[in-house]
Length: 140
Image (cartoon, rainbow, N blue to C red):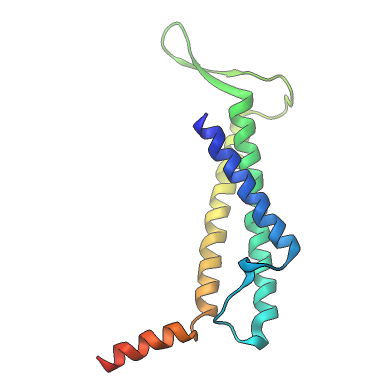
């Protein structure tokens, strides 16, 4: 039950980010520290990051939900765990395939988030908040 909740939450979050990537505006695009001349370029790059993150999170959520809906680990008579297919639909999807899809999507999500954080930090190098902190350090 808990895993299903987390998978659903990830799916909804992926759809949410994907919606704003397609829409192209909203609070998610506001970077107060970028120059006005650079805003459109930053918006395009952020849109690409959000689109990539939304796609990978959505695919990851769906694959995880399918994996735990279609398969179940049961304990056999001798105590060994046996993988049992609960659902006969979509026979071409195996447990290993769905596990590998979730693993690849997870790695892509982490890479996307790290690159997004690096990009945002580079865009905000000249921000007034950073300048004030730098001024305080110099005065001490």
